[in-house]
Image 1 (cartoon, rainbow, N blue to C red):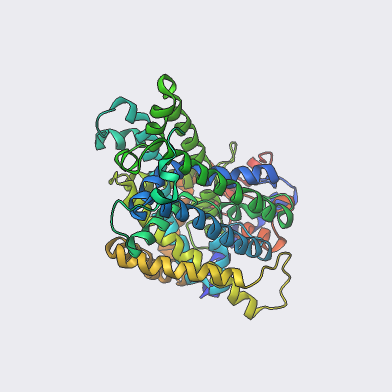
Image 2: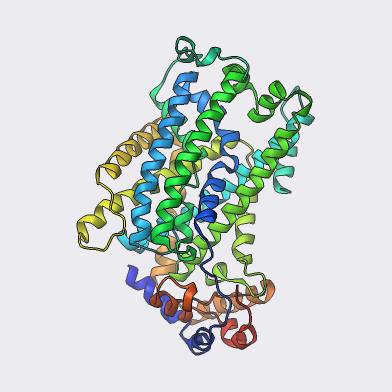
Length: 486
């Protein structure tokens, strides 16, 4: 199956190869550079994780955990499991040093169909949902001070989203595990799912591996620095929440940090909504940055229309991918229930996290002699997969409709893959139509396919592949953009 997709990718743009070779050979063309150092790499991980999760998930975790003590345990265990998963991804990231993260790993290990399903669900659900939750978080925290005695109206939340330690009672062991509802294993699994959303973004650095300076060193270092730091911040932020308010107050609040600020900061409580707004804007920036690289990797393999991987000739930003993400996010805003959105994305995300980590074990068996700059003990992926199985089974038990819809959306990618990717002998009229739409899209957005030669490429083979996949506009106007380099 992979060969079919690869053959389609290489033949689709073979007529443009001459102009592409000329641009790459001269060192010109629009390109992405290796400019992400250790500090920037840590910023990508921390910024993407903290974005909005810590301001949204505490309520969902507390609601399903049934007590303060269990909620804090959920935060700690989720942080540890995230660190284990990041450790497994660090090995995969330096073993398969390609942008695209788990999409690239799943595709290389399990084949084109599995990789496409990961990309398909990311395009349809994961990234739009992440953006929707961040936008709704922003609108919640901006509007909450204007509606101090009630919840903000849903229409206002959607509109604004589209435009986008005084008491230690609850930390005492006798009170921390006092349940305010009956314990339920399924609900605790959902608490872990809510907590895992707050840690979402820990694997985003793997999406930009080819732009990392010395990825064999900086990728694992950034992971080892960032994950413990975020876990520390999250655990103590939740301790701060429960020392300032009771579980009932936390559950009654639709903007936990605003309630926290009102109790502790008094007249300065306006600082909290502004801080959350800044954090969510930073989260949006990081999410858009990494999602564009996922689209880039998918289009390079022939799994997405090449237009989505193109960048602006002057600003070097993936305009078509950003527009597509924005439109799909607006569709997700049809519901303002953030916790349903989180369950959607959490279940599907964890499903493919487990598949990717299982791929690490499969790769060890299939290619035991493959060069691995980092080689972790297989006990870590086994621990991760055991937790993964517990989470998915009980989440499916507790929320069968939400999880079932997520699985159904993922499976719709199977016919799309065979019709759009594997079937490489499409009618000439269809190929001509796609080329015409690509040409019009390039003209409208003023974008071209990035050149992948010289220092900006992860490997020479990938650079040649990119040159062959160039679109009609790159062939016609390639000489006009030799000076554009970013």
